Length: 238
Image (cartoon, rainbow, N blue to C red):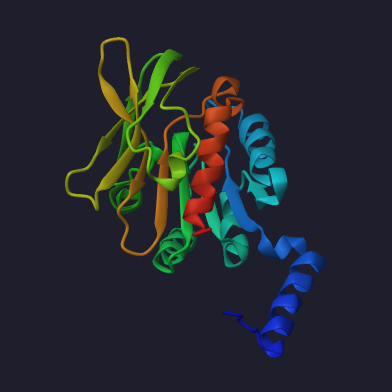
């Protein structure tokens, strides 16, 4: 049987193809990456390394800021908000805008320091967006990460196990929070495990928690880079 495609549909498809070809940025995921604060080299490993990882192959455009007061101006043109900051977001309007962003079904990637219990005056952040958090971590050193859910899009093409040097975060889920789905765990020398990668069961947004990311040993690791790209794609519903 021969299927005929109407000329109007063909013209529409051709028009869309030409539009994307003329403006390749239209197909890219718009990421707003927020860093800054102590204990980490945010410029080197987030602004430079992670941004390059996400831009590779035209996956995303990345806007980086270490000034939380600028978040508000960038959010309207953002598909995925990636928080890695180790400094407070003090402005109440910006805080409300982040929740409005997730309520609108947008993507949120919470990287390394942003899954910490940092903000005593903003408990709803950890409770609703992180569904828990970290208050401590192992001394920097080697440990093993194991993928628990190899069927999730975020773990696609990620090795079943891999080793790295990093800060093994003691993330603990809040039993009263929305809940998480653990995708990968970190195990210390004593055999104790903690979530290294998870998604938060938010009813509207797609939220990813990613505990790895102290320095070069993680950011330059292929497994880390694959997870980061997958996480952004999943959060953006791509």
